[in-house]
Length: 484
Image 1 (cartoon, one colour):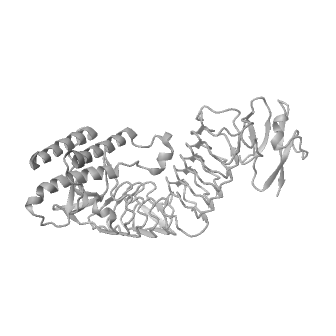
Image 2 (cartoon, one colour):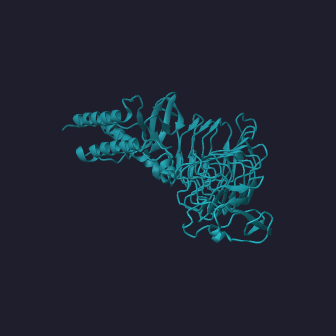
Image 3 (tube, helix red, strand yellow):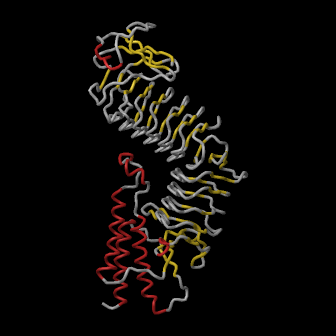
């Protein structure tokens, strides 16, 4: 087969596979920029093949799960359909196989560094081949006479994460033409220590996730910051925006919306073990504190809503005060291994896997919560759950207690809903008594539980926490609390 026929076969195979993946969306054009702009004309055919190879490699490189955390929570349903991702991966592999095996064209792209894709208004940089091993990258302001305006690309059927996982990268220079940083564009660039965003207005979700080398970042013109844009940046000490910014504000290096009602991002490397949110803050954004392992105590006096993943993997967190919180998002406190007790006096909604993997958590008190997601308390530290409801409410997922921990139903709580006052023993008031480590005592801050009395106000214990099931059905038991 001569060279022209080889190229035609590659083109037809590529078009067929891309069309199958995108449902006929072929308006997107991937291009590469050569190191030497004056490449000789006789290499044009090879460059065309290299472009196709680069396309295949770019697709294969960037077909990854959109959020690495969501891989461990497969029931969340927030991922793009896995079958489509597998499909795109197979397409990329097939194209590469045609190039490498079926036709015998070499895959090395020695003369090319960056990969571009045509978008409205100009070009987006979606990664590079030789660039993956570089420590410094400079993005040009134009390509083929049009401005380079974005890093990364996402459409209905395509997700290109640009420089995600470029572990060697320490510095990248962006031209003034760049206005958009896409989803996870620099995620897992562990060694990235320097980046300036002079005219960037939009930062996508997880854009700098796990960039542990970043120490500070300036956002002079930003108008949109996606969820978890800076999560797990454990070297980041401050996030700053210009005082004149109409959309965002910062206080002590913490990023808020303009009127400071939403806390958007807390720098993972910020010093200090305790944090108290300003009184104006009523909402904690998705992933806002994710990976902030240095925090041990957090107080949120007026917060009513906690977003998904907000405190994910805050491994040092031992105490959190939530007096007014009514809603807790999915995986909000997942893998906060230092938490031992939680009191949620006003909470009505708890998301999927909200406290999953909180290995230290042994005491839980729930007021009249109307909604609990699946496995909200799975893989915790053998807790007993004291619940105000007399039986499982209809809004609770069937697998809300995925680890089958003991549950005491029908508890009378204090006026502030923070501790157990009493409960009436019935045949159905205690579930899962045979669970590992059995039932444990209820919790009240500043007090020690001293047993169950059979009359209100008595300080004589008729039963201990571990043998409370021996009480006769119909007997009301009263918690004895001794001040520490």
